[in-house]
Image 1 (spheres, rainbow, N blue to C red):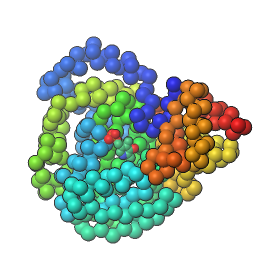
Image 2: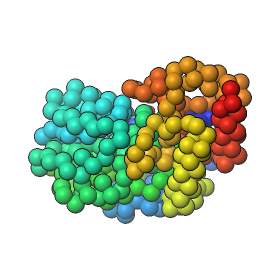
Image 3: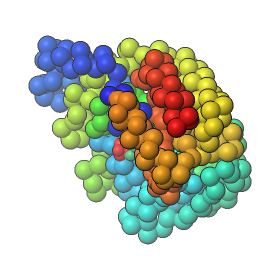
Image 4: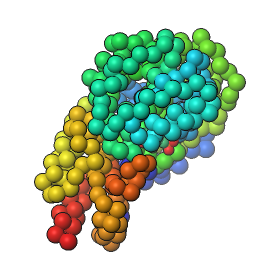
Length: 351
Ligand SMILES: *Cc1c(COP(=O)(O)O)cnc(C)c1O
């Protein structure tokens, strides 16, 4: 099967080999306070920072999932409320969980085809602003210009969910303080690990708040990671595989150019062949998750035929669950696979 599911998604085929290698290296059974583990963790972090072009003074932590970051941020960085600006299901869920934990989450929902409001928000000084860089549920993105404009007008801590864009496109790191993602999307790895990338300003804020009541308090995670250790027994295999994939992939600039080129080709292919992108405003269309609008009947037909052709399409998600399907445009997917899906979609237009 060829999968275009936007997470869990296609894993790089090389990973099979790396799994075997972990056994040979012995690190898979190593204690997580051992030299061998610490060295491996250090190499993985430096490989990730270098390939993704993360600013030197931002820190990288590995946690269990992107979802866990909702909790870590709520516990350790939100002391005087949070402002959640979102247009889809992931941003909304983040707000809901934060509200349960802090009781002080404000919502600013916006429409699918809008983008301008984010740059204009006002927020009290210590409110954490929470954004979703790439809303996987509906295939929208927040542009670099909007993020940079927001950064220019506020000193607030800005936290951003980049789960389905991190490692797929160049991210404007300096515009936000906490970025997080998950290895099962653009990283092309098996599910089961989150990546949290934190600015010096966010670290300073966490220290100022001093929250230390949880096994996954940000400061506790940090104390361990700066020694290349982890607070809990980590996903050693996941960290090893991430390190290997970071060695394998091109620099993010190159990966991003390819992702954007393929995305542009996807959107023009859809328009040329009578398919309608869910997002009409081109400025907010995602490069990594392509959402297509269809009727419920047509989606059932397409998915059934795709399955017979050995292709897995992504279901709709959230509000557009019944009225869209999604196509992952993640780096591990090959051009040949994309061509097969395009041929399939062309063949379906005559039926
Ligand atoms: C997939 C996804 C998540 C959840 O990631 P997990 O690692 O499964 O917790 C959160 N936010 C967005 C935008 C996602 O695409």
